[in-house]
Length: 107
Image 1: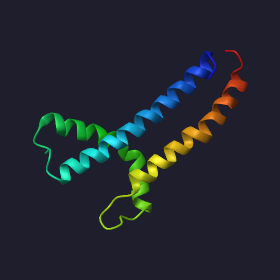
Image 2 (image 1 turned 90 degrees about the vertical axis):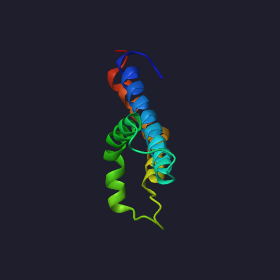
Image 3 (image 1 turned 90 degrees about the horizontal axis):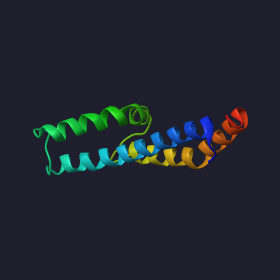
């Protein structure tokens, strides 16, 4: 990646996608821990962390959940979201950053 404003914008977008990817993984793990009664919502920290992860991941997962049905009680929307995020990071983001570099030049 290059420097300047274009490089910084690309860095921020890439970091946001990485954070979202990690938040989805953490949310899935927490849901499993809740399901197997390893942790519970009565713990204040756990409840706050679960609320935060839900607030971060819900805008991405909710539209997918409305389209993708559960299979045997298993929610596939986090898996699909991770595949889409990885595809965006691998294919769309590099092309977008190249276009942004050529648009902004050396700024």
